[in-house]
Image (cartoon, rainbow over all chains, first blue to last red; front, top):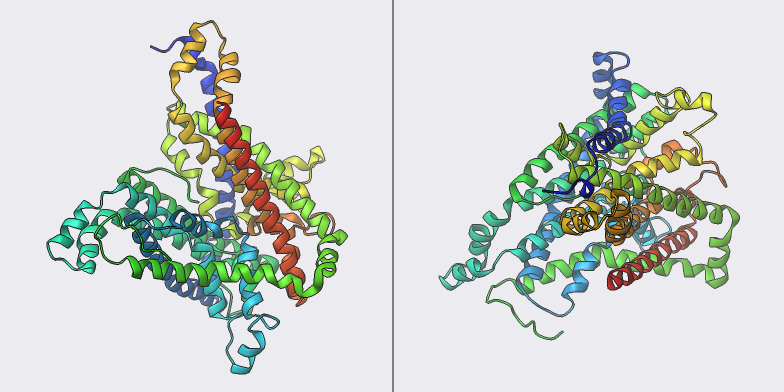
Length: 277
Length: 274
């Protein structure tokens, strides 16, 4: 039995819960509600009509393309990193783990800036690329590079602790019994890490589709060409097209809510809790 | 490189290490190294001038100052939320728990325009504050609100596991020895949570310094008043002043690394004392 002085009184508890509820509603729920309210201000058909605008459709398609390329690249990297870091001991292993998380502590704007410094018109390779007629900044490759940078750690940092907890003996048994490395990975490792892998890919994808600062730097804001969904939100908002801006924002908010729902389900599955970052 | 002392007889070491090191180098290390080299094309004096312009200093002061203020305010807010989530059971608790990550899941541009709509003079909250003479949107106060929003999950998620692992016997012992609940919280619970509070502060602060999307719409972006440092980097890039942009970015990176280092030292000290 806990003594009464070892916990708050019932009155205090109710008060603290209400205070928390008020804080969460004002800070977290109201912004979501306002997005929907503004999107549907002129009715649902008006909101949906803004999505059939060619520029909006291009933005949606571009966002899907950028994510479809960036996420698999970082997934292959994340699985490789988790395999060598969790299954082998080698000098510099700890430093490698730290370096993998580095992009999380870099401002999104700087994550875009590094690519402009490299490939922009005044960048290290700028004049060379210009002569060769290759466009990276203000084009799809730049958007992908910026997105790959900001989503770099997600899969690796989910899988590394997960695989470190798991014993390698099942994999060693498979190898001893004559399985190839690839068979061992796909039949033994993959089933063991699949929920963690989906979890990492989910968070990676949410960030890839929603990234704003890094892609804003490399995009050049060419309408109907280099605008991803978040950039289109900005453009419409600055045009005072609030219904359009908030409808596009509403789509992204739905993506965020779906991500949170799947994340909660996966956490229950893999018995892990934690932030998204 | 010395041969790895293998933990197992598993294959794939060279392949996976190769992929990891090459990808890390190409995507992260090489670009960041080139960023660190770029400002020096201006010469030492040029770099100094570039980062000590009044407009730059005002932007750095604003970004670091408001990020610190928002992270500090998130300490009591995050403590309240984390405590209630871990210690109490109430209806819709699981829903509330999932919601806490919302600022990290919601694309920053969406958060930015939503907060602007809420706090604009004619917005739901802005209209309530206006008669009190408080203007949030398009002022530094707006930046503060956006950074509190973005930083809250960092604080809550850092505190929760620590509160969960905190043995309750210490609190009960204090109570048995005649301490009031307030004394127990101040002398037993709070000291045990201080390292986690500092870690949460560091995470929220680090995110706040570089934050762009959620801030840019609500900030107003007035030079010398409400212009954040990341925006100034973008402005310099648009003027094709790459070295100036890189110099400012380098200052921001070095300053945030220094803050993290300082906080880690502080935490280590607190832990060794405990």
